[in-house]
Length: 262
Length: 74
Image (cartoon, rainbow over all chains, first blue to last red; front, side, top):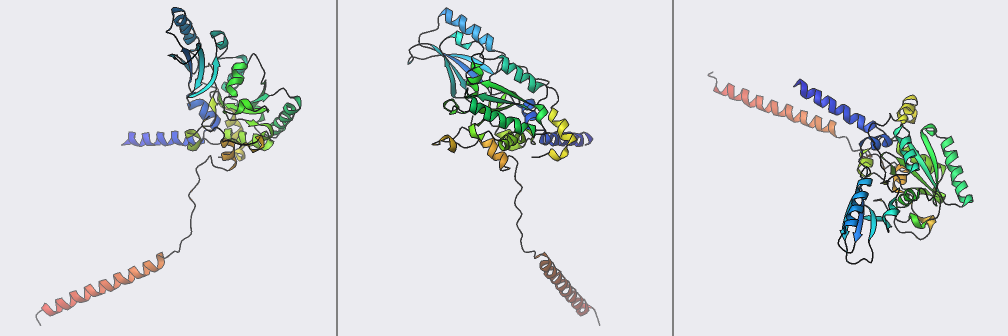
C-alpha cells in the first residue's frame, strides 16, 4: 500500500511539473521532430549507378529528420527528387548536386546552438531585399524586444530571402504555409524547440503587439490544447537534441513571478 | 502546417496565424466552465423533510403505543 501511495505521489508531481513547463521548454524536451521524406522518382528501373547514388544520399541524410525512398513512375519525363513533409511536396530537385546542404547549413547550426544553450527562441527575420520595407519591420522588432523582459534570451537573426548559401533553409521557411512563396513581404518566424518554426508574422502584421503575443505564446504554461495541436512545422535539420541546457526563461520567471501567465 | 491559411483576396485580408489569435483571445488554455446562479431551495426542502420525518415518527409511535395498550391485559 505504501509503494502505491508513493507511485501516486510521484505521478502527481510529474503531472504538476508538466503543466507548469513553458511551451518553448516542453517542445524542446518532449517532441519528436516531424519527419520529411526525400523521394527519388524514376521512370525506368534503377541502374547500378542509381543504386549507388541513392545509397550515398540515404547515408548522408541519415542524421536528420528525413527518410529516403525511391518510387518508379511511368508518367514522368525525367527522374527527379521530391522533398515531402507529410503528404505535401515542398521542393523538387533535378539532380543529386541540388541536394547539397539540404539537411544542414551555417545559419541552422547557429540557431540550434542558441536553442540548446537555453535561449527562449530565435526570431528569424526573412528580409525581401526592399530596404524600406525591411527596415520598417526590423525597427518594430527592435522596439518590441527593448520593451520585453525576455530580451536577453531571444536572438534576432536576419536572413535574406535571396540567400544562395541558405537557399534550402529559405525554401523550408517559405513552405511553413502554402502561400508564403507568393508573398513578397518581410516575415518574422519564431523558431523554438527542436527547430519548430511558427507560422510567421508578415508585412504589416509585424507589430510590437504581435511580437509580444509571440513571446507570450512561448513563455506560457504548456497547456494540453497546445500539446495536441502544436502550430508550425519542424525544419529539416541534423542535430542531437538530447541534454539541452536549462531553459533560461525559468530563471527570469522565478525572479519575476508577476510575469507568469497561461 | 495543418493551419494553412484560408483563401483571401488581398494581403490586408490575410488572416493572422491561428496560434496568435488563440493567444490573444486566451484560447490556448482550457476555459473554466461558466458558473450559473440558480435558486437555492435547499432550506425549504430541508424544512419539509424534517417536518415529514417528525410526523412519520409521531404516527409510528402513536400506532405502536395504542397497539401495546390494546394488547395489554387490563
